[in-house]
Length: 379
Image (cartoon, rainbow, N blue to C red; front, top):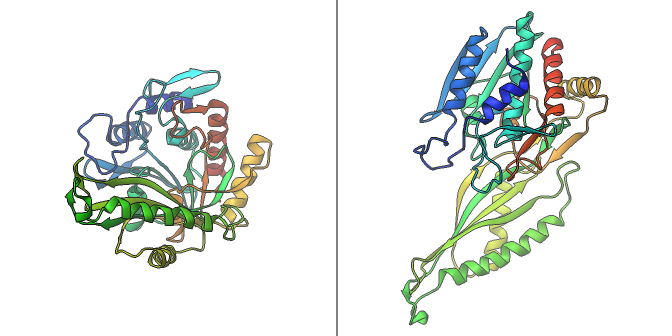
């Protein structure tokens, strides 16, 4: 059996970039090779697996292990895809250990969590059974639209509790924001740029919309904040418009990213935005939904939270913080179908997606110990 470090190095060396809506023509795109590796490794150690196709050539991998108490099921879930590597300053797929850290794309987000979960599971099954039934999921398509976990819950996957692997520095994330994304599009009238008054410039219109969004963003920051997640936010992240240098553009659009708080609905966020735009813009616009993702809020006194916090304290010698974060995870989709969920794992989110992504190896080993004890003792 490999150590967690060896397993992590193997996973980092296998490219698995999320292509978004793009195709899989380049070999470093897509999760299939990681799934192939994990399936072979699990079967090698006597654990049966099944694949669930989510998108062409992109699959979730599920492994099920029977526990001593078959009435309860613990889900261990993390994702196999990574963000791109275009601006990395280190070789992304050449895992290097230096000064107690392993460097490479995905080391922190989230192949370290996969390695820790899988190592713990094999340690427990090598000597017997876990306390409860365990479903280990290596999920695809997290870094773009969460379609991997969505396919799981749509197919009926349920559990008594779930731990979702993300870099939390071994603290417990029990709340996070959701995300609503829209393309805000405006139309104009095309004309030759030498006679601009003969047209209506869509870029000028969109510029006015941008100003409205900037002012609305400041208003959101002044709203009451969630005690763990902070205030709601909105940001303009992509702008597109124009056909060529000598044409007044007849179309322009802006991508908006609205982070919602636990308790806010997607419908409320969209209605609120439309009220602001309708009051300030004197031209028509459209909002096209790109993403509807949901917040997470797990009670501090939930059995999973109490049990996992006690184990982390026993393993690390410190009481873990119960945190809220601004980013989204697969956990909120599980929670929406009634699975109490906590986000937990080694590494810092400040290292995820960076030019020099790395994972601290002492945290990797502590995470293995936490997952192992959780599996042995149950929730």
